[in-house]
Image (tube, rainbow, N blue to C red; front, side, top):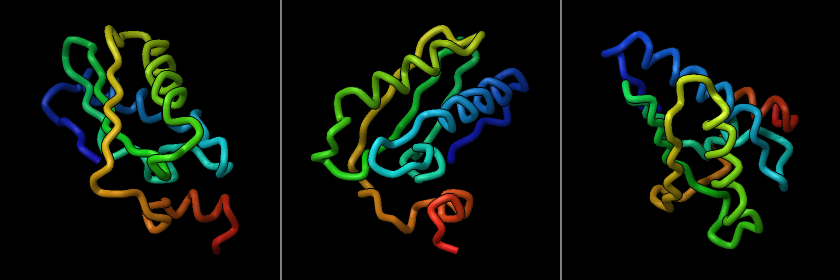
Length: 110
């Protein structure tokens, strides 16, 4: 996860963005996209622009069109966010090993 330590306000905007990402759930796996490891980076700029680089569980994911729009919408709801951009990337490909310990606990992997 890419975090900026340059601006204190930036850090709090990134933290707010991450909190928002924890409220977006994959429709097929009952865990947030953040805990699933689908979010590769969160970049909050001093201007209030937030750029998310994320992937989906597969290129054929049924929410390939709607999930990025939902993520951008949740980010735009954060006070201080002036714009939200969601970039879908396929490299590296998502693997179940990318699920956080919290996500694995939610799924009963422990």
